[in-house]
Amino acid sequence: MHESLLRIGFFVGILAVVAAWEVVLPRRPLTVNKAGRWFNNFGIIVIDSLLVRLLFPVAALGVAAAASRQGWGLVAFLHLPPAAALLLSVLVLDLVIYLQHLMFHAVPLLWRLHMVHHADLDIDVSTGLRFHPVEILVSMLIKMATVAALGPPVAAVLLFEILLNGTAMFNHGNIRLPLPVDRVLRLLVVTPDMHRVHHSVIIRETNSNFGFNFPWWDRLFGTYRDQPVAGHLGMTIGLSQYRRPGALTLPRLLLLPFTGRPGRYSLDSIGQDPEQSVTTRSKKQ
Image (tube, rainbow, N blue to C red; front, top):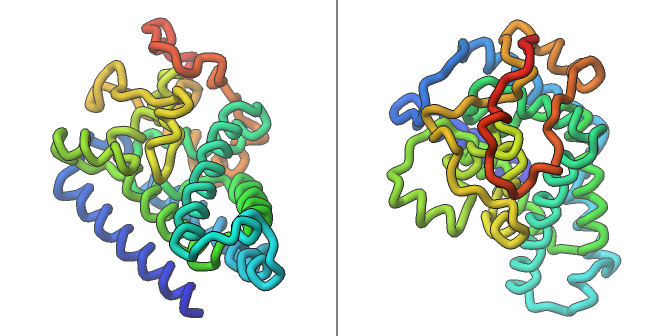
């Protein structure tokens, strides 16, 4: 009960701060009606939350508690001091999320699920939590399997989940940071300007900057891209095959993985410079 209140408190607090920041100091002008987008996005978020509660009543924290009782996992094998165990666990969990994100771009079937996240025509705090329910279920299974193999402290899993939700809302926020602050901050955490590149309509920009919490994995594995080729004000957000808001209503988003067109967003363009020819939009749906 205590951990649920803690997570809800951080969620509501960070959501409120970023949403207010977007109103006071927006980074980009919005291109479509915000009320309609938020209805769709938060509709998906509510469905995701109810589904996870129904199918995974104990989720990753329950697996971590069981692993701790039974002495499972790498952390128990290494006999690390508590602080080192917590730090290692958070880093490994974040690396797995990075690799999972990469996988959702690389595997065509998983990309169909992940399209729902990328099809948003604007990017703001609500986009950070907008994932198809089936993607959320797959992600939960991956996270629980990782926790079982790693055997992290329960506190590390709770800290990681709070960080993941918080940074997802922060780095999807349509918020303005002073450029000198962004340059320093992105050495430690994924900033909105860094992650926004990942939501570009240009294929080779979409396949970059996969990190959610920490920016180091992108730099280490060669998937980092500093800025969008058209600049943050000139870039187009979303997917080239979905440009009409009427095609992105809540019911259609839920059906999108099964009825939609995946486009040419594949990882064979990863790490290369954007080509202007890629910016040509496909026929509007």
